[in-house]
Length: 380
Image (cartoon, rainbow, N blue to C red; front, side, top):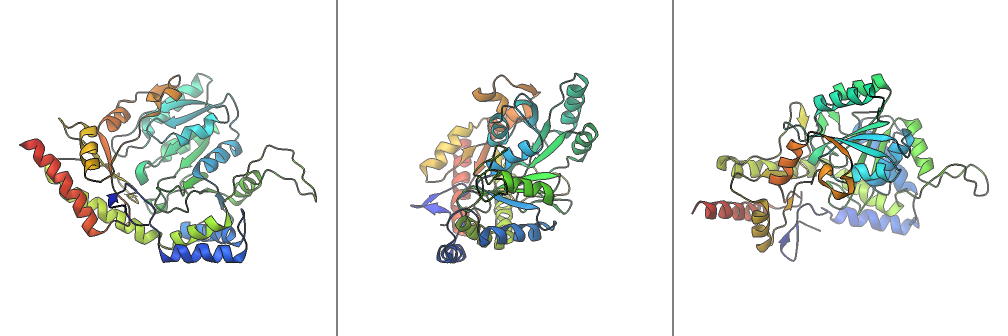
């Protein structure tokens, strides 16, 4: 599948081709159709090699949401516990805690990265601990594939013995000061959802030291005890990735660097077109090398995001609003938030533009030409 369906330009569609078809065929012909199998083992090994981490540190799962839930559970989050999270994120980040029964406390975004405001988060964490309401875990998200420096927050979590979870669902292929996303804390997760930079239709990966990764494998296969019959002493889940999906993910992983390079090129093209108009896109902080999963522009004064989105839609181009902050979601209306104005402004002005790595030069030119026509029309 390329970047269009019936000539409609999509936001971030799967970028697949002959190598993925060959991989899926190989897996089907092997007879390993159900979850687990040699392709899963190979994917986990290749992931550790790509990230430069210890063998056994990756666990392939059915989704990024499953990886998040297991990360929280392994780190001891239980019903009634508090999880601190960025308010600017996709809902899965906190739904995975809510399904356990945990409560949430949200922190605003940082203007320089759109990720959780580290200084504000440290202050909030200190206040929670002082008040005797320490969270069981803190989760931070690399928004739109951009990493930022969370070292001060991670250090404070270590001092308080609070778990830190790195949600790198959108950030595979990104780095911070040369260190890969997903490895910046003691437990991280990736997503292979259909719109992510690599996909196998779904799926995800949990990254941790081998002991934690092995526990995730066990919990994700129904926590079955080692007997010649089915014995279960802990709550487990059916969260493992299928062998066929793993084969497709392996083919995608082999092409990841080229897909990252193309998304970076697309961002540069948007910058060259929008920059002269004074229009900003999502920022890149110092020492960060994002995968540019999505390029998100900020609507200038006088432009309603929905007007531009509808204009592009009328021309067969998909665009979407930026993530709606969690403290604005009805599902989390009873959660506490520290500030929130930065996240609110990003939502009010942010427009996600087509960024798929399969976009040809002709397709990106079509999108940018329509953007220019829209803004030119606003001036006349």
